[in-house]
Image (cartoon, rainbow, N blue to C red; front, side):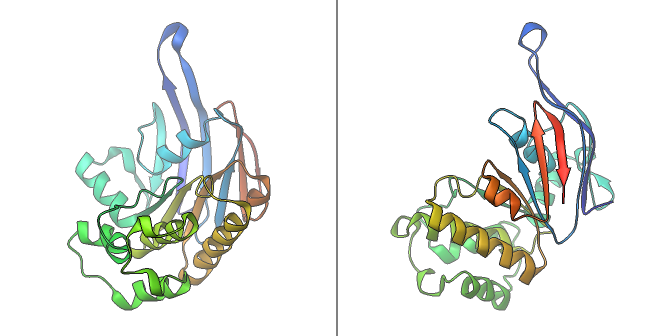
Length: 224
């Protein structure tokens, strides 16, 4: 088994004529310390799969196993705590809080749990991502690429087991996209993270350790 496994995962929206099988019997294993991409056309089910893996959306049937436990058997409070403490998230729209500083955005997941910030670790991330001179600024004072770096730092700050990235370069130009992907790969290697990323970009998919192709809610290929 991997660090995270899905077992016969299905997701159905609607009923009758409006029924949509967003996922059909998906079983995948995410390997610890590796970079996995999920690629597929628009409407293929890749976002639904990632959201179910991350506990952001409930499957209709099937299991998501993390640390030998089916996360959907947890109470909502325990599932919310698991997401905060064991998972990191990077989104296409950055989702930074505009009224607090870069540093406060980065440590926000830790603050929500009233945990002590490991400042040495956080500043190592900040230095690795080239944000040393940006920590007192506000998000709207940064470029798109810089904001995405902050989002990456925030995702790493609570030392998650897995980072989920949903089209993290969708709003970036090609040069910044390459820079962000290289930074993510470096962080996976340097900080021992596991990264699962949705992308429609074949070049990015080819940079991963494992690429899962999804089509019409089903696994089309699973290659290394």
